[in-house]
Amino acid sequence: MRNFICVALAVCATTRLFAQSPPSGSTPATTAEVEALREEVKSLKEMVQTLQQQVKDQQSAKNNSNAPALPENPEPQTAETASSPAPSASAPPLFPTTDTAVVTSAPSVNANGTSTFPTTDESVTTTPSSVTTTDTSSSLTQPIPIIGGGNNKNYMNISFDGMFALAASSDRHLDRLEVGDHDPLQRGFNGRNAEIALDGAVDPYFEGFANIVLKLDNNNQTEIELEEAFLQTTNLPYGLQIKAGQFFDAFGRINPTHPHTWEFADSPLVNGRLLGGDGLRGVGAQLAWALPVPWYAQFIFAVQNGRGGTAYSFRNPGDDGVFYDRTTINRDASALHDMLYVPRLETSF
Image (cartoon, rainbow, N blue to C red; front, side):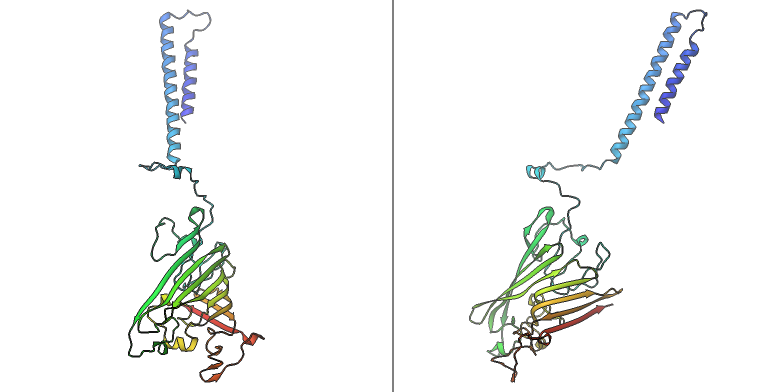
């Protein structure tokens, strides 16, 4: 609009000059008239230049209003921040893993529209949108990242916890009363569970977990136990998840959890008598399916070896081939019926 006004003024000025120019054969203009015309042309030129400058100023103000606002008090860049590259906007999301015994209540949805699998063991996989990267300070309740990459990605976490107990009893043989493998076994101080937990993303489709436990017996000798070590998928379609390795079975409420997550000092009596002091676990594979229903529901089916001290109680080898005054039989895997099968259906409304 400003450009149009400038052009119109210039045209009007030219027209006026032609209109005031004397026709052929008329009396020539005097010096005063010529000088007046010059002054008028000069004023018109100045007006056009003023309007053009106003148009330029308005255009610059419009461009500045579209630019992102800068901080009022920007901090000076150091040599490290100036040399470090800016994080890419298309960087892959973090792969979050934690070491808490929490069961998610409902499956979420992937970017491709399929349901993600809610974990049932002692690791919870959160969605990238729920992971905050603003607070990088360490916390006593969070695993310590020991292997990391750019853009604040953590590929491996490590955590350590210890359980120590002070026991008092009228019975000298606590090992006859306590049924859990991590329960106090003597009067006085006990150190029955010191656990190293490792977890991390293998790639965008798998994550790995390992729990290594150290125990002190009554003679203060150290025992090492590979409690869990497994690999599980993270991005299968149709709400499916596969887990393979050494893991606790999803049987009951206590068995899939670790002692450091309990709100009590020792293992429940029925859990230790039925599933064994170390819980029902073994080497095998597990398939889980988050059912496509409006409420939370998932089906889990695990297959494991049917022998060993942790394949309790009907699969336990016993002591010297005797288990509760009954002679045990060979549990070598020679057929499908020699395996241990653990189905589970869980739901909530």
